[in-house]
Each structure stands twice: as C-alpha cells, then as structure tokens.
Amino acid sequence: MPTNINGNTGIDKVQDGTVVSADIATLDASKLTGSIAAARIANNTIDSAHIASGAVDDAHLATGITASKLTGALPAISAASLTNVPKDVTVGGRKNMVINGAMQVAQRGTSSTSGGYATVDRFFTYKESCEQLAVTQTQSTDNPNGFGSSYKLDVTTAETATEANDQYEIVTRLEGQDLQHLQHNSSGAKSVTLSFWVRSSKTGTYCVALYKRDTTRNITSTYAISSANTWEKKTVTFAGDTSGAIDNDANRSLDISWKLLIGSNFTGTASTTWGSTTDARSANGHTATWGSSTSDDFYLTGVQLELGSTATDFEHRSFGEELALCQRYYQILVDGGADKAVGTGFYWSSNEVDMHHRFDGEMRAAPTLDHVVGTDYYRMSSSADSFNGFSGIQYTTTRSCNMYISAYVSGTAGYTSDIRSRNADSFIAFTAEL
Image (cartoon, rainbow, N blue to C red; front, side, top):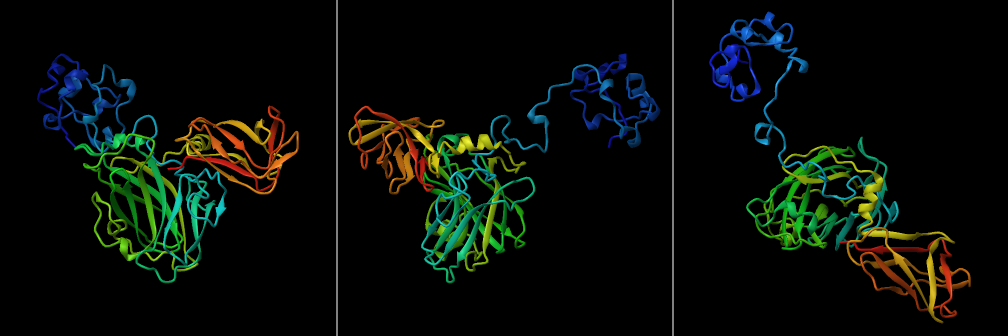
C-alpha cells in the first residue's frame, strides 16, 4: 500500500488546512508520498497539519476511520467506479426468468407415471422413442439446504439398449414477451447464466440446452455430475444471440432442456454457439447413460436463468406469488371429492345447462378444458339431475368462459341450480400451457 502523501493534484487546498471531497476526487496512488505519523490519527481524524508530517502504517489503518469523522459531501458513485460487481444483475423486479424454479407448486399432484406436465408446474418431461423406458415423476422433499422441494424422475423400467433416435429430457418454456431484455438479433445481445441444483444416481457428462422456437436456433453446454446421490450446484453461461429475434408475444419462445437419455442422432455436431437447430446439434457433448437401469434417478431444483455471466443467489419467492405465476398457465376448479362446488348453472334449454366461470387471474391465452368424466360424476344438485361431465367451454377469453353440458341433462329452461361434483375422481381444470 502507499506509505506517503505528497504532491497537490486534486488536493491543492490542503495547504489551508481543509480537504473536501471535490479536492480528493482525482487523488490517485501515484500522488501518495511523504509520511503521516500514526499517532496523528489516534483520534480517527486527519487534517492538513497531520498530513504535513507523520506516518500512517498498516496497523493504524486496520481500525479505519469512523463514519462520524467523515464530513463534507462524498463524490457520487457511478457504475464505472465499481469493480467486481456483475453489471447485468437486475435491480428491482424479478431477476429469475424461470417460474417455479424451486419446485414449490404442483397443482396436478405430487406423483405420476405419465409424461408431459403431470406434477411440478411449469416443468415437464419430453420423450421421443425410448420404447422401453418408464419413469415416475414426483414432487420430492429430498432437496439441498435452502429448498423445500425438488423435481424427481425415477426409472421404473430401463431402456436397456439406447437407440440412435432415443431422447428423454426435462423442459421448461418461457414466453417471448418476457425475454425482450435479452436483445437477441442485435449487436447488444445479452449473455444469460443458468444455475441449478442437481442430484443423480448416475454420474457423467450431461447436456443442457436453450432452444429458440421463433427462429429455430439453439445453443448447448455440458456439466458434470461428479458424485452419485449427492446434491451439486451447476452454473452454465450462454452467450447472447446476435441473430434471430425473439417475438414479443405471449407464445412459446425459449425452451430450457436438461438432457437425460440421448441417442447418437442428437450428439454429433458442436453447438456451443448459437446456430440453426438440427437433431445433431441438440445435445452435443452428452455422454451420460442415464435411464439404462431401474436404479437411475434424477433430481432438479433451484433453477434460475438471469442476465449476465455471473450466477447470483437464488431468488426465492413466496408460495402465493409462485402459485399465481403458475396459474397463468394452469388453473384447477375441482380437484377430486364428492360434493365440491363447481358453480351455478341454469338450463339454457330442456337439455342444455350453461355455467359462467371467471378465471382466477388472467390466463396466458384462452384455455382449453382439462377434466375427468365418468358416469354421474357431476350434478345439478337441487334437481339431482346427474351428468357425466361438461361437453366443453365456449365464448372463451383469457379471463372467462362459458361451461356447458348438452348430454345426460333434462330440466326446465330457465331453472337455476348449483352444480357439484359427485365422485372422488371428479376433476376440472383449465390449461393454457406453452
């Protein structure tokens, strides 16, 4: 460290016994000569007389100068004056572009042997070929410190001989209008960093990829699972794409996919920079043999995609906030059980019942109906007029719809009644997934 102070660049007023912020704004290390006695700063003050003669050594500087001794206005701090600070970290608002990255919300249930969206919201499994492979997906309570849930995949039937066109992966999708700040298709395209916690029984090199649907371009990277059955945090940075714009709309624009079981058709071409998507570019570098044994499993949580080349601490959101974000894509009206309220309907005619339903917050797009039907699963309760399920929805917007029944009902036009479920398997939901 500099031991002396001399010279007058930026401190020419020190000669009259004062040093103010304006005078030290340009002070740099090359101007520090001479000495300051350690005894002179024993009371945590330095004035021009003390600067004129005296030494300051490391031991005295270690205790610093208290804030109460700092007077006058300090110069403004600008981003250009700061070092070792990630410049692309979002200040205010959400830095994490991924919804439900902590796997807190699982509206559809906590366990399923189905593929696709089946348990944890906003994350699904995609399967191509893999004729033998069977997997149970679960919202698990096995997780690293700081998280309450994870997304677990457990192989129940192994793919004993992986074929060239086999592909199995975890995917989450993002809307284009939420990605405009990435500035794709410009010279200022931004890098993004993906961080996540992972655990697997199968060690090896895995691929994770970004796929831009609007312009069918992709980029991939690899990460290593080093220790079996151990939670590990992984960080991957992807460059911005100076080609291929992201549409500014509510449709699917960017997929993040974690490759698990991958055949040779998907690993043949380098793809660590953005380029036009081909099968051979989709999982370059992936060599792990996950899915070849019924002892194989895979856990994922703490998923965060943020601007910049530095992974910051995971952005935890409340369960209520995360649920509301998920309900933009999926909402449940009835989740099993007899005598659960559905709504209030009326006989539009003697053989049609209509019911208006307003969604709990605006959905991404006009949704479709996702419900379970069965003999006498629902009924107009006051007339005990039972029916198997709704025939569909109509006049649908992102805010509301009209649910109607045009089979197995019979009543008087204009008659009104509450509608209830009658069976433990009754289920009604609305989906606007990407």
